[in-house]
Image 1 (cartoon, rainbow, N blue to C red):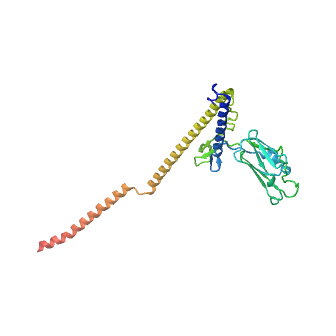
Image 2 (cartoon, rainbow, N blue to C red):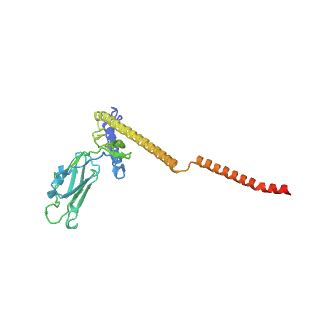
Image 3 (tube, rainbow, N blue to C red):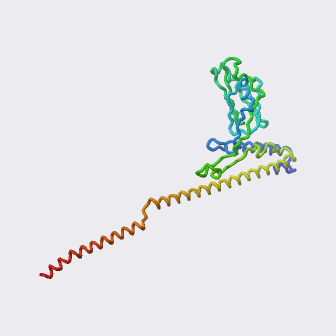
Length: 293
């Protein structure tokens, strides 16, 4: 951005820089999308789910043939279908659009009767399942053109992140909350879609937007570092508690070695004294007999 904002650059130079920036934004999105742990996306925002009650594609299932809508960390917003009957269905959220060829999926000559068609709009994080053909124009079956203009609403989730249970009780004090926003360049948190290096003015404006995005990432990293420190402290505290409990159990269950050694020494001394007294007693008759001789 700084390089493009330099007046020594011409438009051709800025176009090359713009192409590089676009590739970098796509790479940031790819990294965010692929950062997954235990099946959960870590860097694409949390908790957004389809609002089926507000999605006309689902509420009008009798005419659209939609039987299920699933999302995978899909950003909140309105997703609109384009379906002009030519066998291709598109979904657009105002930023990203994706098309899928559906004609062969529902062709009664190529698929079994009643077969469902699954449209996986992976770029958008949406998966739509349609009822396949039963008989011509049957109610509830998808027909080409049925989805045109219909929408899917993805509502903001009520959960902001992950909850770590760090105590034995079900109280809020025994839980640690971790929230990570949408770290995609195209996401609402970084909001880098409008970053452009095409002109001197847009490059200078982009510097401010990039600074804001960097500040947001830095704040998120700081929050994560603080949470990790809390978790490490909790782990250390738990380990110390386990050690103390083990010591307490040892005190109650295990032998006190000092006391046992003292008891053994006492028994040995008494045994040796008894042996000495017995030997002395046995020696007395022998002494008397020696005098008589």
